[in-house]
Image (cartoon, rainbow, N blue to C red; front, side):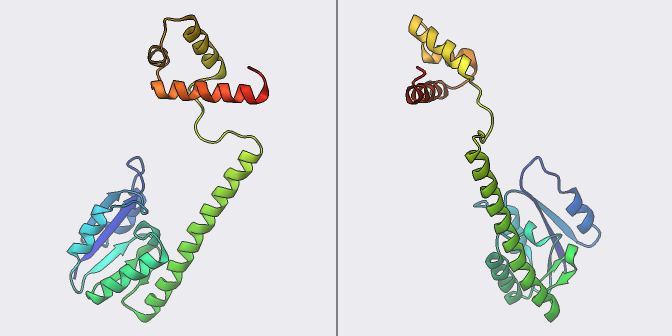
Length: 193
């Protein structure tokens, strides 16, 4: 019987240290993936699933490190159990090879999905509230209104082109064109142009 540990972090910048510390002493091998759980491909996860043999145990630190949703978690567990593989969620001490562990796993899967949906809902509500208050969302623009006015003045004076000015400002030509059009539309709607 082998215990294969699966660790996942969402981005290359994140470190799996907490998961490594929790799993290293109890697993025969650790597999680290740098990918979002909701991404289209998780090659390391697929590799671990393929390597598991009857009698082996799939080990994760937290349930959300391996699965996207309650349905995903329950479906994967059904597939593992059909192959004679059990699962252990170390942080919660849930071992699906026992009836009580299976019950707790099912409940935790539902709670984890509920938690993800609530977080998503709160994020959307917070963004909507900020937008209603006139806050600009996203990263700050590279091109200020003053920079755009100066670019427009240079374009009118000639012989500068959008491409020349974009290079000078360190942006793509389409970014400069789009920003100029947006500023023009905004000015036309307020009568400031």
